[in-house]
Image 1 (cartoon, helix red, strand yellow):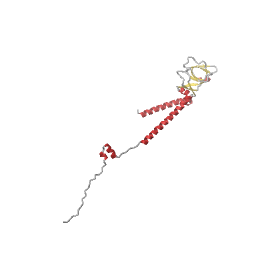
Image 2: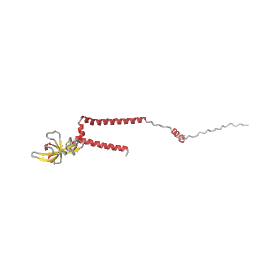
Image 3: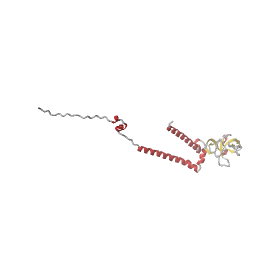
Image 4: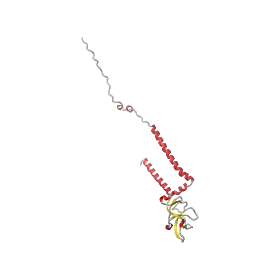
Length: 217
């Protein structure tokens, strides 16, 4: 594999990875693009190993009557504003409405309070590992500066590098001089006397006879 082919292969792989990473962030920021209703970042380890802190969960709206034990749901507790994502371990049919007993996969005991059906935000469709770390970092002033500033610096550096290469190429083109020599001189320098001597007709001295007038005796 030539170096040019290798560079092209590396560039193609890097492009695919970049597109994939961007797509994951787009899905997390705009879940409706893939048909989901909401997305959240996992902040605690209560659902490990299924979900870890820093993962992003994409949630679909769901009819509570279709939920079963084993489903992972996102809900809001009455005394908290932060959504919680836990697994349903029991469906409880009460006189007024359905309720769900939930528990984190890493917890030994179920959650102390039942979750009313009205508090269910949705069912977890899928999770995106590690994306939440970047999302949380982007919400800080430092993260915003890094994520916005680095691409700008990379773009400026790329443009300066391209300009420098173009300028160097122009300088080389301006300094290139094509040197020519006469064929004869080139042959003499290399010892090719036969080629260096042009074929010219030889000039030989000619003798002209002069006629003297005849004398009579």
